[in-house]
Image 1: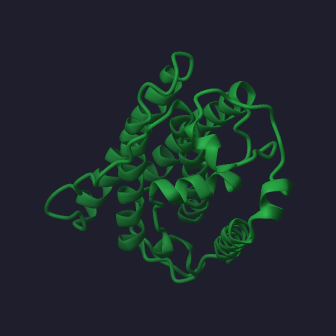
Image 2: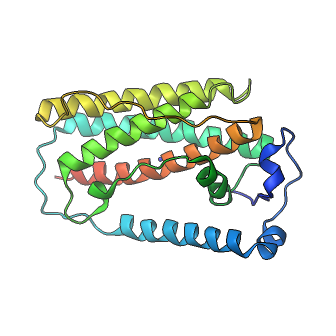
Length: 229
């Protein structure tokens, strides 16, 4: 589980009114620090894309029932569809179309990302992958909850997406319990971000939807690997 650029001038995050769609060429050229940060972010994104493309170990023997794999695949597709709807609406209505550019704002607000190192290596670690996946879903569930009140027209989509993510997290947790690898207690939700403007909330909505989609793309690939005979 991006269509156009957006200027990230410092005063933009304080404004409640969306501005006309612009590119980042002007401010980036005037701010070498921002340009370097954006280049590092894009390099990091490219690095992880390469990591995720590494073939999974075909010799892995993983005791996962096919019923679990098929149920997860169905839930992943549903969340991906809801996430795409949220991204498209934010882009069409508020011109928030380029999450890589908004990543600078996400960094300043301390928006966390979910690590999935145990799911993207050639030596796939089932226990570690399920644990990181469940923690990641729990993280994005909390971030979606923090987006409550994003806008009247988007709130139903965010609420449905949060419910779908929660259901998927429950499915993964139950499978971990069946395998005897679930922690003694559920993970606790960390401190969620607070927003000082409607723009910040909507911009973070793009980031959350985008990062959740990348997580799901990797999860989908792992599930398809597990589904192979």
